[in-house]
View 1 (cartoon, rainbow, N blue to C red):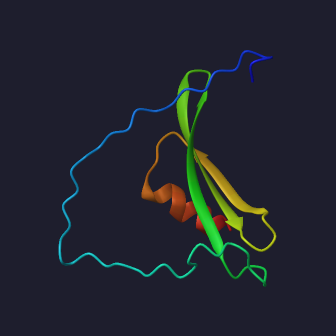
View 2 (tube, one colour):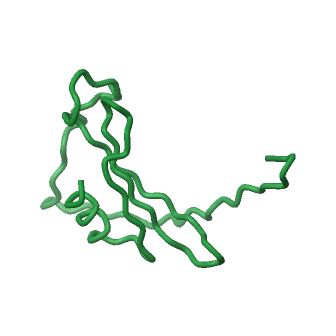
Length: 92
């Protein structure tokens, strides 16, 4: 990165006070940090990444199969919302 003068820009963390209600559902950690799978299409994981293109911010959503480590589907949108992940899973 130094050779080609690339600089990492870190986003500021926005710490908000989170209040939990009793109606919230919690799910157990089924993977227990075991990310190596024995069958394809058994476990998919998803992640959001914010990228800048020509000064505009976009959110990239990627779905990855843990067995093959290949990208199943991806979508890019100008903002991060629930429809981005829902539509990405529909594409997958």
